[in-house]
Each structure stands twice: as structure tokens, then as C-alpha cells.
Amino acid sequence: MNPQYDSLINEEARTQFHRDGFVIIKNALSREEAGVLRREVDNLVNFLISENMDIMTDFGGVIEPISCGYIDPPVSQMYILSKRSYSSLRNMVTEDPDTVVPILFGKMSVLAKSLLPTATIDNPMCLFNEQYIVKTPNSVSSSSFEWHQDSQYMDASAQKAFPIVSCWTALDDVNITNGTLLIEPFPRLIDPSTGSYLGLPSSLNSHATHLQHHMHLASCYEKELDRNMAITQAHNSNETIPASLQSAPPNRNQVYERQRPILVDITAGTIVFLSGYVRHCSLGNGSSKFRRAYMPQFSAGKVQTSDGGLVSLAVPCADDQHERELEQQQQEEAYQQPDEFEEY
Image (cartoon, rainbow, N blue to C red; front, side, top):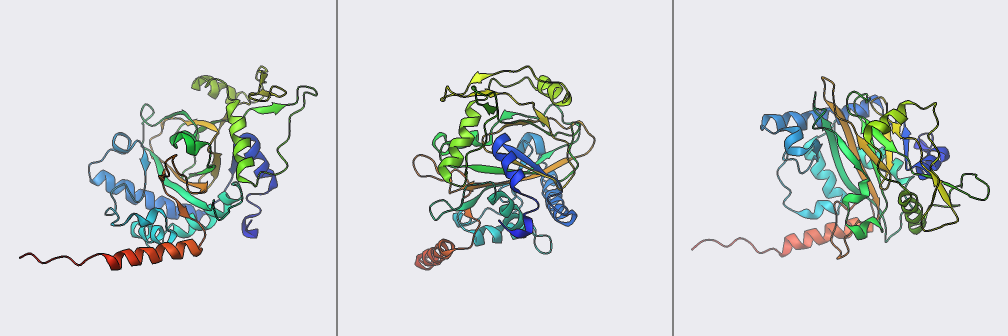
């Protein structure tokens, strides 16, 4: 861990993340950092509107800074593998003093790192995706997202091989009115012989143990709740949910209990860290203002399909020898390209 951020992601926060599949860190970003992100997304939204694009219809509310059309398409695809190349492109979207790069590869990546398995040479921590999620005013019917797990958008084999963490960052105060998150925490495992909740594994630092634990808890989810029922349960926090004890596959010596849904109500600058396997959805925006969120995702390793292709970005967050080798390869390829022939 970085001592500078120990007070943000402490042991208690890590325990909650691995137990429930998410953790909320209030005021994780400073007012200045949140302001940098707000100014960038406002520029992107204003540009798209000026191009007669509809944020919800054309983009589904999801705006990726590099690929949304604000800058010209990259000539080389090296940026998906190189931190330096990616940072250079990102600085074309918003330059100093408002560049988001120090936030993305600084505080964001450090905080996410504490919730992922220990990085190794084979599985370095990578930026997996980066997007703004914008809900336009009075868009209840078009700006909600159904129940899902972020890992479900990955190749089936990748879901079982690469942990990811999503950093859902509120850029506005977020509540039930303007399109907040609704989260169903992981079910709680119970020892049937004692009736006590089971604790976490002694260590979740290894790639395999982390995956096994999160996937096992996610496998205990029951049928998706009706959204209105989930909201009602979230509101009635003083009432107990009727016990729903079921055998936990594949270990029939364990049972699990469904947890109460959580309706997120947070201020701007707060980050909700989500496991790739936790179930969540979001509500539509019924307010008269835009609702803006920023969500970079980080992975433990370069997320690949079964045939070796990349699912999305695979940008190493650390500066290392691999980064320098990629840059050298890029320079060699550029040098080997033949000059354009003159027309005769």
C-alpha cells in the first residue's frame, strides 16, 4: 500500500470489499480532483451535443474519452498496451493543468491495487477500461441499467481467469432521484453446525485465491430481485429480511444468507469500488440536471480471451521494463516501414 492512502483503504475497508463485493470510500477524491473530471466530461458532452449526438440514444450514457470521437482515432493501437502511449492520448483530450492522468494512474490505481491480488510479472495490474457514465436530465425511462455483474461483459474464459475492480466515482451528489446505484452484496456464508458467519480466507493476495473466493460467493446469488422490491428492502433497513438459507454450491457443508440490497446515497468525490462479480444495477435520472460519474476499471493481469486476444485495454499501471520494450518495438516498426512511393 501507499502510506498516503492507507487511511482511505484500510483493513476494514478491504474486509468489507471481499465479504460484500463492494466498499464505499467517502470523499476519496479532493474537490480539485473531482473538478478536473467534471470539466473533462462536460467538454466531452458539449462536443457530442454540438455534433448532434444524443448521449442516451447514441452512447447509452457511456462515454469513453479516447473512442467517443472527441479526438482523431489513434494511428497505432500501441496505446492499449503502453502506459506512456495511453497517457499521451489522454492528454490530447484534456491537457495540463486539467489532465486526468495523474488521478487515473496515481490515486485511482493505488486505491484499486489494494483490492486486487498482488501484481506479478505474469499478471501485472492494468487499466482495463475507462469511461464516464452520464445520465441526461429527465431520462428515467432511458438511463437505467439492469442488474448485472461487470465481469459478464468479458469473454467467458476471461471471467474465470482475471479479477477486475470498478471504481464508480460520483462527480455529482448521487441519490435515488438522479440515478444512483443499487447493489446486492454477496451472500453471507454460514457454518451450519454453529450458525455463525464464516470469515474470509486467511489471505486473498494470490490470483487464484481471490478469484475462487469472489466467484464462489457470486455463485450463491439467487434469482434477481424485482427492482422495486429491492428498493423497498433497501429503504426498510430496520426490518429483517426473511431468512433464506440455501446450500452453497459446490460445498454442501455451507449455507448462505441473502443480504439486504444497498441503495447508494453519496456526495461528489466518493468512490464505490465494485468487484467484477458483485450484482448491481442503477436507476434512471428523474432530476432536471445531468448526473455524471467516472468509472475506470483495473484488472489483475492483461484480460485475454480463450484464443489470446485482448478483451479491452491492457495498460500496465507501473512503469517497468515491459513498457520500455514495447516502446522500442514501436520505434523499430516505425523505422522498418517503407517510404511512400512517388507516383509515376
